[in-house]
Image (cartoon, rainbow, N blue to C red; front, top):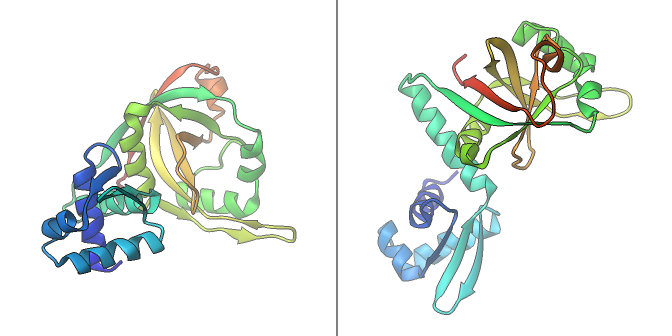
Length: 220
């Protein structure tokens, strides 16, 4: 991304504080960016056209909301800096177990995925996923994990359809090794899917509604 546009996203996030929406005039934004008002307006228009922000006019100010691509970009940059500085990145996620739609078994069982799981993760996963709805207070951590590089599992095609790529991150649940998987090019969701070579529900005696703690590392 163009540096000026990226810097504008950073300034907008700073103005928004803990949220993603700020109310700012072109003049105020220009001052914070150190550019002319005309240039600041151009940056905003371009970010809006590229779907990085949503912009509406209210009185003499603009209501600017950072959209998912902007937030992902910021967390991706944070992860890259931590990797460059060789900082250990381990996080704790907490949520509640939920039933899925039964699709996990179908997808995980595809040989196009299974072969890569065996090669890259060193496991033959149990055919299915454990789904966890992450608590709101862990949203920033979840976003950071989702924006990291992870271990890439490539998409593939069979005779009937196309299967998309996924990213995997190493985790532990009560001392049991597991992997968090995130479909690529998907919108943000607070549901995390977990795979393991064990039937986690059975081995850990888990039920829907149980609170679960997952330790996740971004180092690999």
